[in-house]
Amino acid sequence: MVSKLPQILLGLIIVIAIFVLWYYFPKQVDNTFEGVFYQLGSENTDFEETVSIEVYGKLHRSILGKKRFIGTIKINDEILPPSSATENELEIIFSDNYRGHISYWLTPKGQMKGEFYGELFINNDFSKLTITKLKRRENGSAGWNGYDGLMISAPATSRTEGLKISNELMKNFLKIPLD
Image 1 (tube, rainbow, N blue to C red):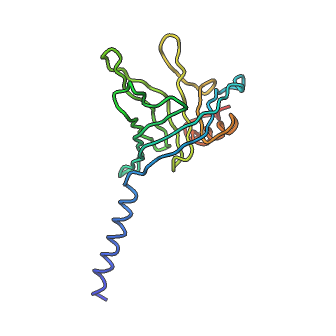
Image 2 (tube, one colour; image 1 turned 45 degrees about the vertical axis):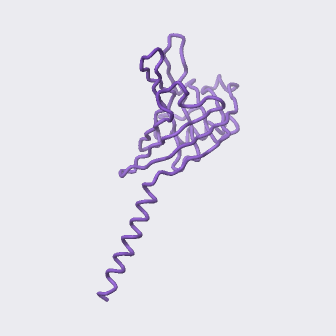
Image 3 (tube, rainbow, N blue to C red; image 1 turned 135 degrees about the vertical axis):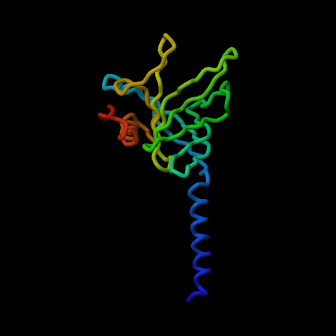
């Protein structure tokens, strides 16, 4: 029995090594969704537009299980980050509830300027997403709220499906469901 112990230990080490490599090795994300862009609020039910969303990059996982996406997101013809950004890819660090900020740096007129697009919520395998898109105001500021905010959700073909996905992915963030 003693002679089999090294073989068992070696097998166990190999299994653990394979698991660690699988768990921590970045996962390729190459998803194309048909989704919906809509505005919250019962008075905005007519504001609905279908969108195509392409997500391309890698999903990294830290030792503590935190997820980080490095790549690009394309919504119709809008590419994030835009070509005027200082980096070619977004870096989105997700919290425990799979919520991350979509932001990037621009250099207009040689000055660094942070640009915040909104927040991205995903499910565990990145097969569903919702984005809270900031609304730009005339004074240059931007904001979002749960009453009349702009949303992008996928996969969805209607505002109703989009709301269902948003409420599902944002349930740990919201005090009351979106409508």
